[in-house]
Image (cartoon, rainbow, N blue to C red):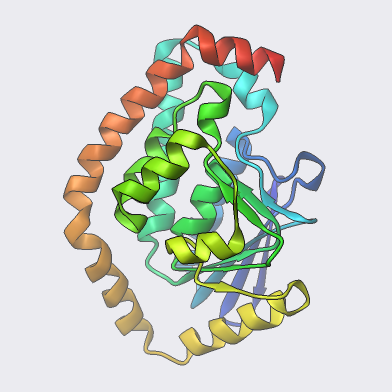
Length: 248
């Protein structure tokens, strides 16, 4: 059913695995569509907890090269529609009504870092690196900035977004982006243990708690997201992104 990811059910737990290892699990338009559909499916079925992870040794390397190059050929309207789709995906992850666990088995970069850190729990192997690298290719981390500043504060967000630097899992935990660092050979079992802990709780209480956590921020977040969508679409049409996308 899905060409860019695997969706597996194990009782009340569902696991979504980004399955483009040859592309370092990079995000494509099809992957965004598949992920939205998988989340819709999980929301409607009997799944109690969902896990996101990556095939191979990378969680997700951000937007793929073909998609970046295609931006240079798109109209402003097309870029705005693409930006809005990405914003909807990130907001969907942030507000998903069932608990989401990111099992970060390797690097999580740019949009991949956004996906990993927007989950309710982010477990990471020590070798994983995190970073919002958009500024290094003349791009703009507009959409993720809306969530990041709420997560870790403005000063630390400026550090990560303006430098585009990669940080170790230990520093990501210190910043509040990672919940727990887990040895690679224990990642699957520790993730399953956390899922069982959540399954033991009342499902209605978890849903209501998540709704409470997101509801208060929704109005201001949506307004900020709309501004971010417009900025994201505008920079896609600039010479900086066009030339760098072609070089890459």
